[in-house]
Image (cartoon, rainbow, N blue to C red; front, side, top):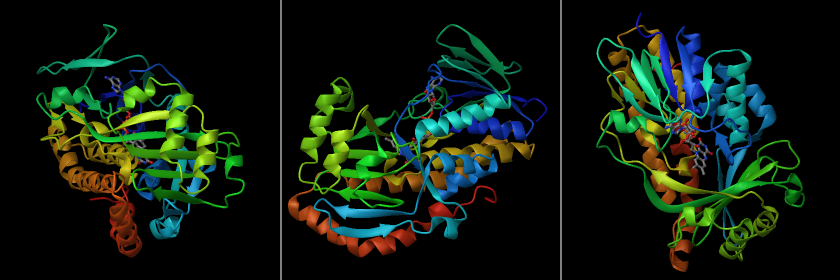
Length: 399
Ligand SMILES: Cc1cc2nc3c(=O)[nH]c(=O)nc-3n(C[C@H](O)[C@H](O)[C@H](O)COP(=O)(O)OP(=O)(O)OC[C@H]3O[C@@H](n4cnc5c(N)ncnc54)[C@H](O)[C@@H]3O)c2cc1C
């Protein structure tokens, strides 16, 4: 391990800064390189499940994020007309030791980055877009950035997300991200929009004949306190085309798409501003997650479509498990292999689940939607039990 004292980490999303914090605890320095300039307020809302919250607790951030976010006490399902289909993910804190917490992606990111900066835990550089690495025997690994600069380290961690550049080094002819044919729209509305809708701490979600809508509290901020999202089949217009439209045009599209859906969906859409449009991407299984002194983690290794609500928690778990394995002091290649052996089965099981969940948000015939809703009502209690393995995972004690 004597040669593995400095990590180059590519990407300051979720996995990158978290890994740097854990590596620092393990006595390994890290430099983190992010392609974009520093910005706050990016992205929509997300939910961190109990398994991810354990990781945040371990680095002392769970309480702050619970305070700045909103605990989700259940995930409730409805049909397009508003008939209740069932409820899952109740009493998470009591059952799994941490709650599921809704938060703004920006809050999570800022908290991670501020923790690092405030305590000078690692060096963080913005506007450093990785374009390639050199990994030659008996020399440090060299990362090359788009601005012509370079950085040297003992190993490199690709936490650069679904479009990972490091992935093309690790698996040169490997799979590329593909569009699953579903588009995501999302954003925030003021808490006052739900003033007449007593949802409490529930996340409310609706399966339509085509598409899906969800909303729930995500922060105490009165202006941006509710997160919402709509997932729908692309129908020949891709996310990039929507991103080229005005906010009024996107809002009109969403109002038409969700016309006739139960309240308060139209009220949320009326109030929606700064709507974010995302592609729903997936990446086929990679043959390996590492090559030489380069390792992929988070979405770079196992991008998961968002339908299991686990991608961020998996990224957090990866960060903690990797640093725990590095503490064991084994040879770098063996550590990377052990990381993959430990993490791959869980990650792939969750990726497969997310794919299956995505299928219920596609286009159904009226009869097909009716049957799906009945099946959901019947099967939700069983399905809920069948998901416990995902939340019960505790990265502090994982083998
Ligand atoms: C619409 C949507 C909703 C979601 N909701 C949830 C949810 O509720 N719960 C959940 O657990 N997960 C959710 N996910 C999934 C989750 O966002 C991802 O799994 C998670 O962000 C992965 O973390 P990461 O750190 O691996 O990658 P990212 O968070 O994507 O971070 C990658 C970082 O690398 C940077 N980068 C990229 N290329 C380069 C380069 N060449 N050089 C330098 N930097 C680079 C990027 O700018 C970015 O900052 C959702 C995803 C989407 C799209």
